[in-house]
Image (cartoon, rainbow, N blue to C red; front, side, top):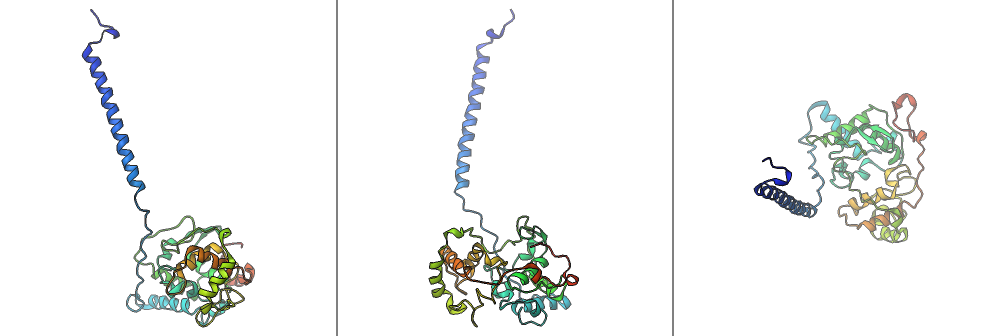
Length: 298
């Protein structure tokens, strides 16, 4: 007699039930394992940024010949931007590259040059286009040094970019699709300027900063001006309170940076509440025949 669906043998039904039970047990075990894995992942420490390498030695690690000479020239210009015969005509205030990029860019925390070349070419939100390391270096003359942009391919440009590139040798490329920042750039704190207290910043400035930068902010032999006609203009990155906060937190006081984030924010608000030169692009570009292709309209 042929068996219909309702006439399956008892062993077959029992076997099917066992298969379902096994599957349910496996699902439960997987869920428990996955839950434990997620808990473990949640408890893992946040990924650390890549360790900043030690800078090469200027006396022992330079390549021979003209390349080494150009790199050394770049270092000299970075340290003495406003007085060096090749670069002084492009500087419009009392700052040098080393005013912000401490120890000629070899300080691992304060706007370091170490690894900077790895990020270029990079997308720049300010210029709204992809820029090169040369572009980024030359634009600082217009903004942070309130001067004139040196020509593309000039000795100043080639020397500075050769020096910065030399400081990045031996490291893996890390091109940045979001902004022109290298892998070891100053940590971004993402502060809200609305939380700043410039009045409190004034007292902090007088207690912690005025000895070097002057109670009037106009600088001294020990520190550059931080506002006024000889400081950076309002088109510079440091003219933005969040950017200055990041830098102050990483760099100041010089030799012993120990400001809290709130202290750095308050000082930044106080410093940037003072007058400084206005950035007007056309006044900072060289004549068209020496300009090359400039990379922004503002």
